Image (cartoon, rainbow, N blue to C red; front, side):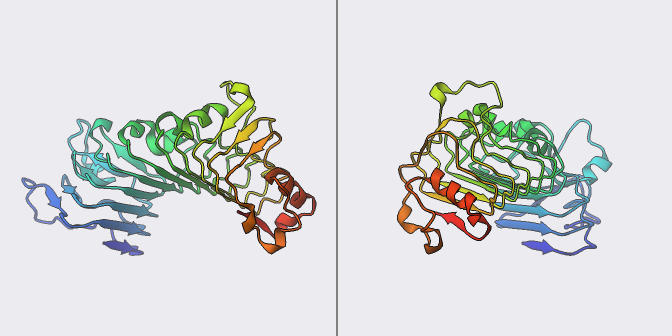
Length: 323
């Protein structure tokens, strides 16, 4: 079910004349639900009516500016009619037992209620954009973290005030894909302390369009000691660095970086990138035979030297590294 670009819609289900003695709307077969560009949408159904979605796997709410709360628990002691009217869904425990993918765009509070009641134990993919929070804890709500045991993919996009990624590392130990796009206030993404916890299962790291990012790993920040000066991204298979005009390196400190599982790397639109790192770099599984013809003159036996040659010749202005 999709409702897109209907600027006059304020509610999805009309409950005029309905008896609140039976205040639940079941949707037993719906698997996908999308609300996009509904500028006047306020709630799914006015009043104290809940809904249940036993088979729903994908939910998207994008650019619905008048929705202030996405989910609100039914029966809160401080519930008032005006607060209920501000939430898109009024729910009870078990309302979304199979939800696997949630996409949210806008400055919205995701959940209001007791976090132990949150019905999202199967959520695997979370995509958030256009929120104006300054921290992950504010944008996602830190109480959410323990209620999402199966979350493996997070995409953070167009978050203009997001300063860092601290908070992700504390609870998302099963994270496999992290994508960060268009976050204008970010200068770096990872520190020694966040990396130690966050990359335990990380397989794909994608950073795009973050104009202020100077390095991905800030080795000089945080108070976590680095054993033997080595950092290992044990499970990382794919790394994408694209359209980062101020990126100078993955890390400026002289650490040894080990990527034993890295098979794919893409570097594009990073005109200030001088090297991958200033220390020793191990990428034993990268296959160099697939280098495009326009990069053959720049390619050396290691990634560091190749990136430096491209920087000197300003090759990143017209070419990219894809392995």
